[in-house]
Amino acid sequence: MAETGNAPTSSTQQELVIERIFDAPRELVWKAWTEPEHTMRWWGPKGFTCPHCEIDLRVGGKYLNCMRGPAGTDFDKDFWSTGVYREIVPPEKIVCTDSFADEKGNVVPASHYGMTGDVPLEMLVTVTFEDLGGKTRMTLRHEGLPAGEMSEGAQQGWSESFDKLAEVLAKA
Amino acid sequence: MPTDRLSTTFAALADPTRRAILARLTSGEAFVTELAEPFKMSLPAVSKHLKVLERAGLISRGREAQWRPCRLKADPLKDADEWLERYRRFWEESFDRLDEYLGEIQERQKKRKKEDKDGRDR
Image (cartoon, each protein chain N blue to C red):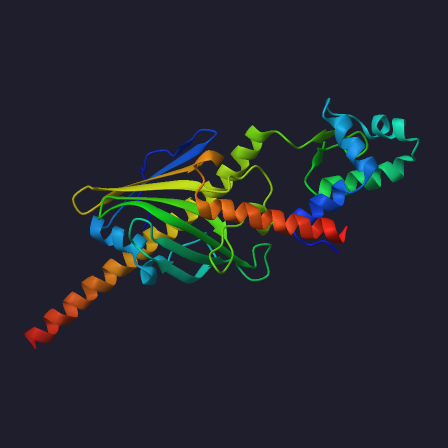
């Protein structure tokens, strides 16, 4: 059951912070985040499934997740995301980048999935897990990365989207 | 037919009239009649262009059908809020599922422990 009385979540323009208290020991919550067989069971909004999850849990290692929207809805397709682990402190903290991707793990802009708005190509996700004696307080910070901090992968994503643009223009 | 967002956007921008409409809207929102004026076009013709721009997400229009002003959709702060809001929904709903799943695993662990214990007691 969902723990009530979670701290209110807040956001500013550039980041969002979500805090949850789970009625589970910290090691288990850590596992749920870092082992694909567990992550696949909860990754994605209600009604979504996660048919693919790869996790290379080391600094510099990558993850590649797929979430599949409910059949017959606007989200009835596969959404891939990838990122690079920047910091791993078991079972306390994970810092990783987060981007939309294609199924091969190449970074793509959000427009690839028909999303509008000024979505940053690469985001930074920081998750911390605090042991509350059998329960766990998890805090997630999700923020856009300025272009200057973009990794090579993200820049590659841009150059690919420019290739795509060139294609579109060639056809026009 | 263009299907992805980028194609839709570029198809919308490929027309000089539509680019001129967008240029006009950078100085503020305008009614269809005002937009039609400089082009010597019929209202239905302008409406057609506006529909293309709207579908591409480049402009938005007010609620009252007849009198709705058009405006550029380019407010980056609003956009930032929109994508954060989408991520908020993604995470919140994922965490609801995580919460349920953590409950399930622990139930299973408890059950297994009990079965092991029962097995030993037998």
